[in-house]
Amino acid sequence: MRRPFALVILCAVALLLAGCQAPSVSPDTESSNAELTPSEPATDYGNNDSAPPAPATDQLGYENGYWYNESLSVTTEDGLNETEREAVVARTMARVERIRGLEFEETVPVSVISRSEYRNNTGGGETGDSLRRFDNVKFEALFFIGEDRDSIAVQNSNRGESVLGYYSSQRGEIVIVSDSETPTISRGTLAHELVHALQDQQFGLESDARTRDQVQGRNGVVEGDAVAVTQTYTDRCGAAWRCIDRPAQSGGGGGDRHFGINFMKYFPYSDGPGLIGNLRDRGGWSTVNDAYDDHPDGATEVTYPERYPEWEPESVSLADRSSDDWERVRPSTDRDRPDYAVVGPSAIAGSMAYTIADDYNASSVVQTGDVINYEDGSLDSDDPYNYDLPATDGWQGGRMHVYASGDETAYVWKTTWASEADAREFADAWAAVIAHWGGTRTAEGHWVIEEGSPYTDAVSVRVNGDTVTVVNAPTADELREVHDA
Image (tube, rainbow, N blue to C red; front, side, top):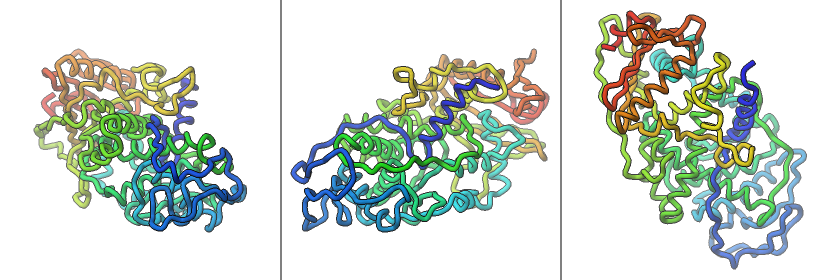
């Protein structure tokens, strides 16, 4: 049985992930429009007769008949019926407006679906063979998912068992996942998803991000903003605002909870709020608003906000030098995505963090305290994960190509670094990851991973100045057939 602490940490953070909700660094709160503020007791039962009358025109902090600090008469023990849900949504919209300083342009509808329906909806639909193979190899390259498993199925399983709700930009609505027609609603989940609706109405959530690292940069703003607002909302409950108590709610349970993948995907929720706080220090919410038109180019600018917006990733060229036996695998042409992967620093950090929680080997390439943040001996709910690792700090760019020969697959992954020392530090750390998964270095300097490992293959790690090239093939003899290793 591997390290019990890892399972505890995994479960604790998995609960925070439920529904797109995450902890954050709390931004400063505003005190504008104080003349609209009635008495704000710390409980939320009964009607608040001191609330101001409806304004003549719509105002920040007022939505669909409810002020942001008005109390509600609802019963939560049996869930929320449609009328109660409308009231809760309206007041939460008003509170999100109050914190964020932006007006909803229209009411956000909320629907309810069962967890089984959600699982079916998130099954990914038809996935082409090329896309599936490409994705499988990418996750194998990160030492997340072995060749005997399907990466898309694992990701869908992670998502399908934990999500409490989400915002659909296609339909412009929030969807609550519950098997009850009168569900309870996590106020954090509702507030978080309402921020996404507000973002969509004010800025649009369309994105030109096409690689995973680009998505991490863009989502650092989107999710960081939502988390920061949600944390402010939560902080005001009981102290300044009446908030509804409700029965405890959890995700569906079960599923394939994968610590490494969750760590990687949690990145914008963990580091995004720090970026938002930095931008607010520079120029308030208006500076955050501007970041929607000029979002970070990758995870680097989210982890290190002081580098935004000057930092830009390097464009890495990678020539195909495989033999005729190996053919490039390109994702399905019906998807708007490049035919290569960019595996950035947040994904690399996830690979290293996974070595503290996997079931294969008792070793690890990082210590718990390197990637899990504690405050006074407890998990820091504001910032549970650390992605700023010495082996990832100098990342400047990357490119990965995937190859296939019959049923066999291979890859070439090239990264560039800020200095030769940074390149060597990453190469040494990545060699430790390979060794963790059963790799043994050969006389030629390659790595051969043992048969019992989920990643049985041969791997070459070569440093050339500030560049590191990783080549994978089924056997050491085939490394040069895939690339001149």
